[in-house]
Image 1: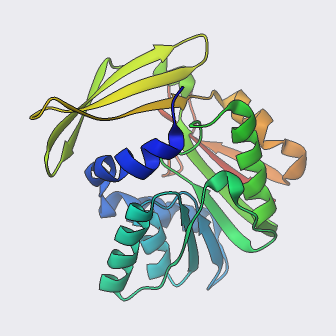
Image 2 (image 1 turned 180 degrees about the vertical axis):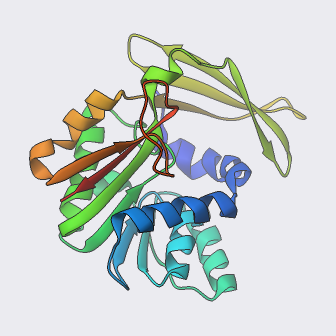
Length: 242
């Protein structure tokens, strides 16, 4: 059984270094802010925040950002980056499933395929946590991989470039559980950095799990640039207004 806590505490901080695109985060936040229109100085929840790509982009725009992550290593990197940029982030080490915020935020984000590492029931609970964290009229943005695209276009191997070398990600998809198992191998040393198991969801599953009766509106997009969602969209972006 995949141990998500161990992976994100021990392995992910090494792997995440291959995803340090500030430009992509700035572009994604530009669209999110433009579409959701949070008030000036709004409180924003970014969970998980990782090393702060999106949190910092939000702080640069004058928002009060709370970042939640399980990895102290990632939070330390976020603190260092915020200090270097002269920005303030409120960073909390916590499992997202244990968040107990209530009516505090104008905007909440769960980006970069950060749902699906738990059981289906725990994922439903996580979505409830985000809803509860929002003020009335607050907006939740969810960005994840699209199962219906992935099953037709699954690559047996992907590549990630890290400072210490090339990482090959070997994919195995189980159609019975809709879970993708991935082995992250550092090429130069033939060393296993870590293993992941991610539940991929179809749009109708996520919409049902959101519990639409809790939201005043739910919008569907195919990316964090506002493109329309199509059956062959690689990603699912849901924008739910409380």
